[in-house]
Image 1 (spheres, one colour):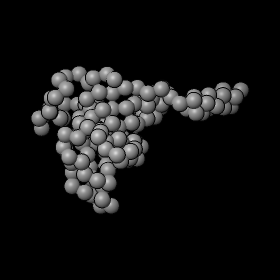
Image 2 (tube, one colour):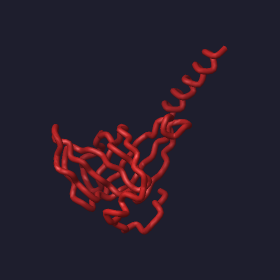
Image 3 (cartoon, one colour):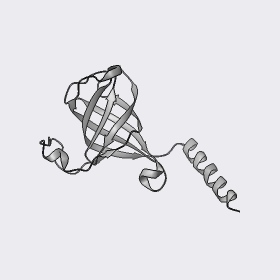
Image 4 (cartoon, helix red, strand yellow):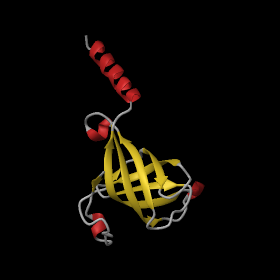
Length: 137
């Protein structure tokens, strides 16, 4: 995994949190909570920045908890192929439950890694490229 620049234990102050641009991206994500038997939890992100991610769960988490968040950035975001990324993050803030028991979780990204596409992704992309090339002929 690649560490995010800066000290791993840095906790941004209220002013520092705003230094990194946030991108409103409602994307599907899978969260795994460290030292938990809950397994993978499907969720959706609210926004993502270079140092953090905000997502929703159906339960609260203690501040300081470690989580892995896996998500795929689509081509309209990457301006190339889809890119799967796994973040290791630390929960910084937990917001009160919203309607439908959605709890907002703000987490500081400490490490990240790019994941290889599965063979199914490769075949899907290959089929899409083939269709594009044949539709222009």
